[in-house]
Length: 434
Image (cartoon, rainbow, N blue to C red):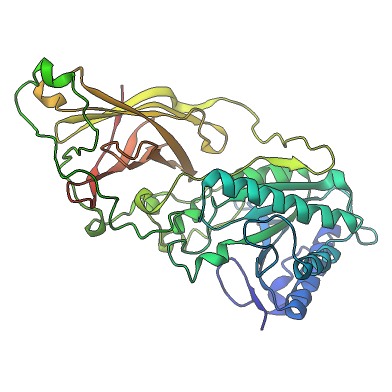
């Protein structure tokens, strides 16, 4: 039996699919599309989620306005594993889906259609992104065969960056392998949609790690000794983290409560993608059960050119490539630079992470400096800044920091690190700007 659900996993009944403003040409088109997609899902036994996109009213108190529709189709053999070539069955299904988006009589020609490919988290982030992009282009090309103008068609590979199911559960991760078809009112609405999805906090509900975040890989059981005295120069010259760990006086990560994601209230502007009433109920995972997320650019099918989604390169006030640091159990931990753009709180520059061991004891020279990858998730007044350390031998594995958008201040934060027995530990980390 085909499954039709909305974004809250509620079963859709016919009257709930309308969601359209009467008298609007595109709203009537959207209603027809949704009805057709519902019919196709039943015919082809597809697992499909249908959603009506809305934008917040332009003035305070104004009603939400319909802006488009989204159809997410689970890949149930549409593509072979690791391939961007549609199976025979997949090609037939996509052609039927394409017919639902075919131009209709008297339809305004301003709308834009975006096809997004999604994978599960098995494999590398880069490989998944590239594979999903090729798949999205294959599907977009079939839509174009149905008479949709190629200059109105766009495609994107999101890879594993937007999970909707638990990647650590082999029975559930397949739900993340899906094709998403979005139709919106116009190109400017498309840009808003793309930016809103880039760092949408709703995708914190599931991590991109395929392993449960309870134990990290075993490292040497030799723990770096902590001394209250100043570290001798002879000690400073030695390598500090080759197979060793540093004690940040935390507790097992599995025993600590990670609630930082609940602080990220949905934005008032843009798309109403998360209900404010339900935002705090979304189960969210820490960076320890996540991996760096890599999504691709959006390309126009006709020109091959990337869609310009950033209006400026201005920074959020106070987050213009400054150093942020804090002592944790006597060790100084620095993130440099913290670079967050004004537009949708995107990462401007990727940071390094440094650790000055026994800083409280007077050490100023022994620094561990490693490359990192940051992802951001934007709310109304806060940003979750998630940092992953690329060197698996480093004494810190990842960090979650909640920054205020209004006063250039870290509100909360936590760092994760391996203990001497290989368990993941966490410690409070609320850096200040230096």
